[in-house]
Length: 232
Image (cartoon, rainbow, N blue to C red; front, side, top):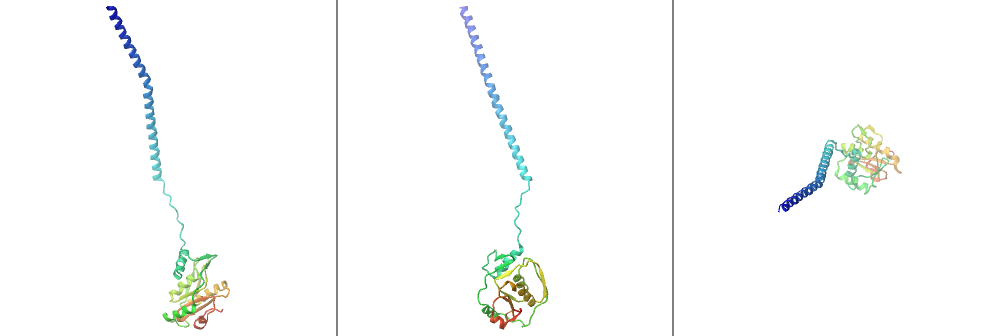
């Protein structure tokens, strides 16, 4: 009886010892895995912190970096003025205005009957004195403007209209001044462009309808009813 009790106790102790050894071995085997998981978590945290820091630096850089402004092309005041001027005398011109080449402005050929235009003006305009000359002034003609444009401007100030019966206008390249009365100024402008037209340019002052006419065509009404200012 004592033999079996002793052997049973020994068996139980051996079983307990084997169980303890088995559990210890499992714990030893699982520790590296836990450590590996902890290492992975730590690496992920470090990477997330680094990305956050980089993002914050990029945001600070964007805040401190000045915004680049797109430079718009400066507007050409003279060109805009020409476009408005030609649009005012001919609604068919678009915003870009007529074609310009080598300081020559190419205009449409004049349309209509110049005699009818002037006769109709006679009906609605009070006449000027036949030998009227206008005020003597120093009139400037600046670079980028045109002869027609400036002559019209100065004539309008004195209640005179300009009928530019020509298919070309001319941009002023070198500025100049004319210190004369309006009629003499118109005569000089006509003479200055005379060589650009095969038949020359004739300048008239139609006093009965307060109109200055520059044309390269012959017209009996102009010859008989207006003062011819050129020698053509």
